[in-house]
Length: 194
Image 1 (cartoon, one colour):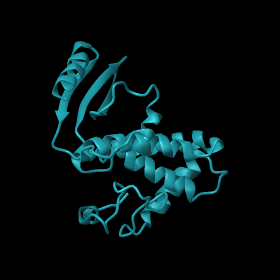
Image 2 (tube, one colour):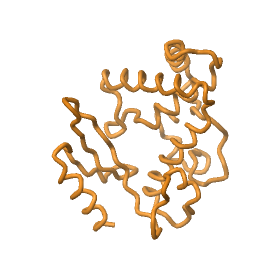
Image 3 (tube, rainbow, N blue to C red):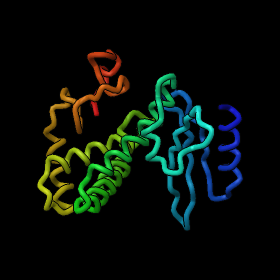
């Protein structure tokens, strides 16, 4: 694992456009945080790191759904589940609403970043949480909403949300790693269960 991490960090460090490389291991899912300079803009990235017992990686990351997660450590499971979740959510959004969903998500992320509340490293909501919240707004809204109407609906829904009730897109599955405060008391300590 350490050798692979060194290779990844070395590859990033060799690119002149990559800056501010920081390894963050004291979080639920270890990651490498860095920025890439494109033209005059600096684009931040958080790269989750997982070590899988596979000879080769699947060609498409959505094939990670077939990976057997038994025996993997919690951090690796969280990284894999992040990829699975994003892929699964995008597949659930009906094609006609996908462009509206993506535009609304971009606006919500921009809103959160401008208010300095976009960063799960700092205890705020991160990309996957915002993705889930916007997906929930899509589910609770009529199909004919445009991005601005959905954005307005998003803020209306979550301004009045009872945060004692978790934001879920579906009921818990039989996967033991789903958010489940009945099975894992630590899950019930979340300030905003998403």
